[in-house]
Length: 342
Image 1 (tube, rainbow, N blue to C red):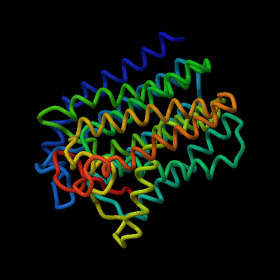
Image 2: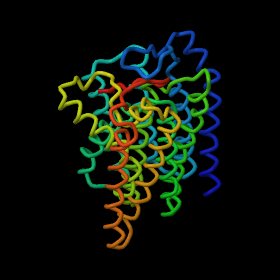
Image 3: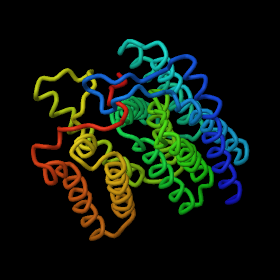
Image 4: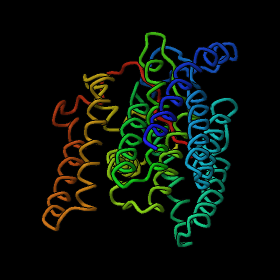
């Protein structure tokens, strides 16, 4: 079983990496370009839509996983990821009204979560929770897709962590699903950080948000604690949540692109893309480990893990001010803009 897990991961990686050789010329021909504006952190027009290749890799990888491990619910996981990505693709190419995007996300969450609830015998109360999780994290992943490498690394970190949990609890389907997400986004990373870079586009960020939620729901229904599954996404949730609250208090339009996120302020303040991405990823690894202790550790360990999570999240949120003071919003470098998906 272990060899099959690594096989589907390897296939997802190769498909994601190699498919861009075909997809990039098509995107260039169709002029699918991310043009910078006054809110953008990049200064040159950049091809977007590389998430198409990642979506193909995830679809193939999860499909193979469902067949190899005879796990019917994994088809629902694949459906959530791919259909969510399809909505992002339409947004990239033609644009969609906010209400239409929201409706699509709700329908996808309703249909796929219901299918998993029925197939895995979970309580129906998970259906509304699944819808909320899908809509919320699709937008969070889109909000956080604002500097080179950050989304790909988030897929690697969270997907890789779910792989570890799958192995730890002897759940090869969970391990393989997590690994497919991790390796598919790892395969895109060289294209994102290369000199002639590509952006994932909304198709990629929607895939990331929907795919991680779908794998988390499947893992939870398989017996893994939701507390442990939530650990690696806490930094993304905290950054987006605090930023939305701050912008709302300032009376800013929440649907407009901006450069207010913590990771954006770190990059613009002088750390650049690489180190800002490293910080976000490292903090996510820390909260992932602490989440496991909180879910399965002894009482004293759980108490310490809560304190640890608060410290890690608090330090991350305060880091721009600690490092740069009022300079964290100054400057910019090459990145994709942070734009809401609903």
